[in-house]
Image 1 (cartoon, rainbow over the protein chains, first blue to last red):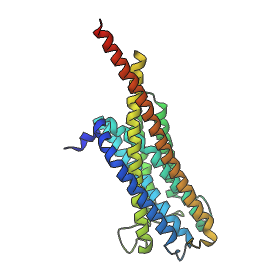
Image 2 (cartoon, rainbow over the protein chains, first blue to last red):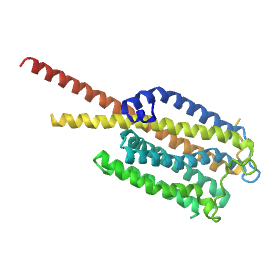
Image 3 (cartoon, one colour):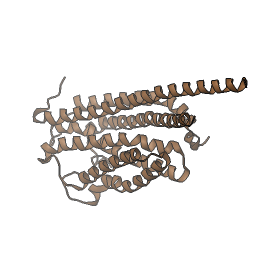
Image 4 (cartoon, rainbow over the protein chains, first blue to last red):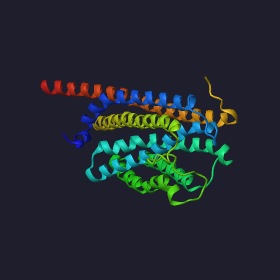
Length: 242
Length: 62
């Protein structure tokens, strides 16, 4: 059995119909547990006070905003190289989900930044690259809508996705490239000394799992819709031709 | 039960409201569009099957 079998729309529909309810239920469970744990049962930070509770939304959303683009990059490359329609449709399905996570990261960042930095916004490397990433998401979604032929739209959006990947990577590593700006360094690290304290880390880990599972659920659901929509378009075109 | 958020209550509660609002809107939109496309596809498939059956019948009867 090969992974490429799932590039067949029928195989994908069969597998996703079975997997989707489990992933969706696990995502709801992780989000409810993680967010309730973080909000109700973790202490305030000695420096940032109760604003540390924003961490459980801001960090997972920012991580998924970048990772969603990386997933779109991989599926776009699969489309360009192997011409599997499901991969192009999966990239299309992921874009609004990635945009929503980017908007959550930007909104929670502004709400967190105001009391901590004294400003809602600064032209800081990480913030600016995140704003550009949000604009790339919008451009990517608009390009899919603007081109009538689905294969041409998939080609053009794949190229845009490759170009936008520079900003997705920049969003991730901006704090390492430039030691300037207001945004702090990465909060999470595999090095225990640099990572946040366990009391914040464990609920954050559950929230990250919830965001990852939510992303997978929504991409599966939306890809199924895109596959049906493609079939609908083909049937309507056949009907018109008599 | 409710934690003491102090002077940052607006920022914390605003963050949770904005994030959960965006997530709920995205999930609702995705489910609504999925149901709409599925319903329309079922209608068009039924129409196509009916047309194919009529065509086959007409062919059989010359």
